[in-house]
Length: 204
Image 1 (tube, rainbow, N blue to C red):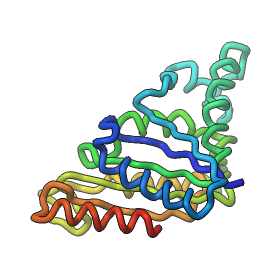
Image 2 (image 1 turned 180 degrees about the horizontal axis):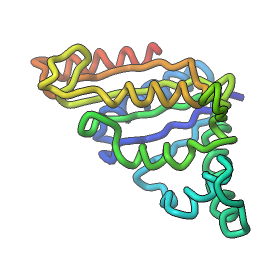
Image 3 (image 1 turned 45 degrees about the vertical axis):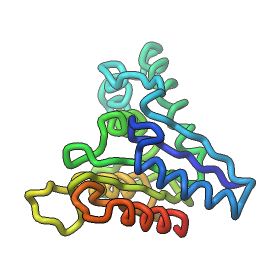
Image 4 (image 1 turned 30 degrees about the horizontal axis):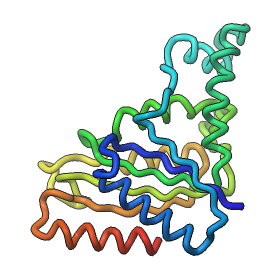
């Protein structure tokens, strides 16, 4: 049975364009394969732990810094539980608006929690980083008000899709599809452009 984890990166609820596009995609998948299971992770309503000193110390033990004592193991076990929700999905769907040229801080927070050695990536001093995830894919829905690919730099720089592309590669997900609705504001035909994006979302 195929499973999808939908990670919602926008706080705008059902007014979010990226969320609407992702939902259109998921509904189209369900029509073709009703047995698919959907796990929705709304980062704006999820009680995620801070990645603070103890979590960072637990992480560094995998690089030979310090020891994994009982206190650090407790916080590490919490991270492992959060990661397992991510790794148990066959497909990752992310709806993500552009914020200040990059991704919303809630999504970055989540990525910082789950991107851990021995869980999502391995490291070798000679070979560098290697992704540990296999046979998974991702579909990402990118929106932005002003930025669009190829636009003049005065409309912004893309640390949005480029960052996520780098991250997927780092953790071993190399089957990644993207659907864009960019821009949503600097367009003379916003409704038509959004409807076209909906069609693309349903056809992915």
